[in-house]
Amino acid sequence: MPNQKNQNLIEEIKAKVKKARSITFVDYLGLKVNDINDFRQKMTDEQAESVIAKNTLIKLALKEEGIHSPEIDDQLKGPTAAIFSYKDPVAYLKPLFEFAKKMELPKVKFAVIEGVYTEADQVETISQLPSKEQLLAQVVGGMKSPLSGLVNVLGGTQRKLVTVLFRIAEDKNKGGAS
Image (spheres, helix red, strand yellow):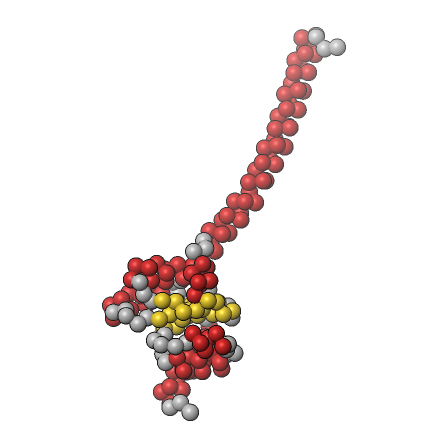
């Protein structure tokens, strides 16, 4: 049975797991204190929060919240930080990988994105996708293009009809209509 301090930490992690839309687990070993503080600030800017705790406590909290798999048990080894995202489940991944590329740390172990276990390489692929706003703009732009074309075609037909009617009227006024 964990002591009271650890029990409180488990409850805190469980509350974060309940609230989070995604959780990414990273190996932070080798980051300096200032780098860790910079990293935490970048995550806070993206409405994500990082927590460092013992793997056994993280496993217990996840298990009590119904998130458990052999893959998670295998990956939760060594120094681990958990990054909880509360708003957008993937928005923080781009800054995370930019920071990791610049510093060569932290290394992503895996993520649980909206309840689904996701391996590190898949997480990196997701981080390279456009943001939700960009995707919505692309969809709207894609829908707008055919509609604009249809409007131009229909408008062209009306213009041609008006031109033909105008010419017929001119011919009748000149007396050349048959």
